[in-house]
Amino acid sequence: MNIAIIGSGYVGLVTGICLADIGHKVVCVDNDISKIKKLKNLELPIYEPGLEDLLKRNVKKKRLSFSSSVTDASKKAEVIFIAVGTPSKKNGDADLTYVEGAARDIAKGMDSYKVIVEKSTVPAHTGKEIKRAIRLVLHQKHKNKRVKNIDFDVASNPEFLREGSAVTDFMNPDRIVVGVETKKAEKILREVYKPLKARLIITDINSAEIIKHASNSFLATKISFANAISQICDKVGADVLKVVEGMGLDKRIGRDFLSAGVGYGGSCFPKDVDAFVRLSEKVGYDFSLLREVRCINESQKKAFLKLIESHMWILKNKTVGVLGLAFKPNTDDMRSAPSFDIIKSLQKEGAKIKAYDPQAMGNSKKIFSGVKFCKDAYDVAKSADCLVVLTEWDEFSKINFRKIRQLMNNPLVFDGRNMYDRQEMKKLGFEYYGIGINSI
Ligand code: UDX
Image (cartoon, rainbow, N blue to C red):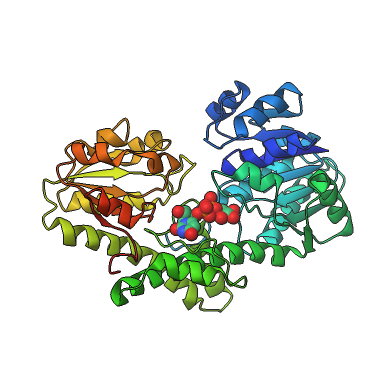
């Protein structure tokens, strides 16, 4: 089928390239001309494992192209995905300006039936607003007697892609959620996803929009629950790793997303939890549970800072080596990364920061000041008074800690992702602290 993707960011680009790879003819659109130019030169603006090969393969097979015109791309497409950003406003609302803009631009180019699909994460009732925005533009065109009344459908098809495993997640989805209002739209979206042979949930648009917000909010809730348990473990002398292992073996709970650490970040959980709290308030429900999930996430970072201060005593003029900056491994994304707040707080206490991340150095240099960026973990460790681990990159599990110990001023490690073995580190002569394992 002919498909247009409006918005070539993490979600739009992965969706577009993967839809091409399963056999569709796809145009990815973005208003950032330099990004489109890069893509036409087969350069990816994001780091995502496996995506570059698919980009090259599908451009070569002429199934994938790039454009900066929404109107042109929409004309040829039968299905148009809106995958533009929905950033958080100050009050936590999702900012839907770009969604409305895309809907209006699509309508300007419409001269035949289309299915316009919400791919971006949007609050319930957005589908209704998109329909209204398109109707307004069509009415305007109709009034100027430029076009006969055109039929169209709006649908919701939220993504469940995790950064760093987005291609795998697209090709092997647990489920594909499709919110539609007509059989015609349902048939078309079944056709789009047929090659994936995946489990399709067909529902109405509101329910599909809620499924997305509720899923991400529940995952964030699991993480905050594990983080709260880690604080209790440190107070009662329990081992959080054993506790979550014991919990996770109950198949009604499941071990995934129960890892205590310095908290969740990324472009989705913080934004989606905020938007869901706001949507709930707007419809008259006070989602206090979710507000508490957010508070726990913030206090987890504060607790980690307190742990560092309690063992460093004076931070002023001390050198703190930071391993890992990205909000999680296998991505270069720094959006709402815990490292941002933690490094800012350490700097406020007068600490000197050295840092290294395998992928996120480029993005980090744009948001940090006064940080010495290093070429690897050993460079970070050199003359450091302590080491702080914030992202559990696989690369960091292969570090030679004997060498690290030689390089550091003081063999003191704070592991914000519990990625090292406590006994091992003590045997190597380190004073080692993690999350929820410090009083066993
Ligand atoms: C998330 C959802 O998983 C995905 O379905 C949705 O489409 C987009 O948002 P993503 O934000 O890319 O994906 O990353 P994810 O792997 O979910 O991790 C989010 C954050 O939670 C990261 O900061 C990670 O470090 C943290 N996390 C995850 C924990 O702190 N503990 C865990 O057990 C799991």
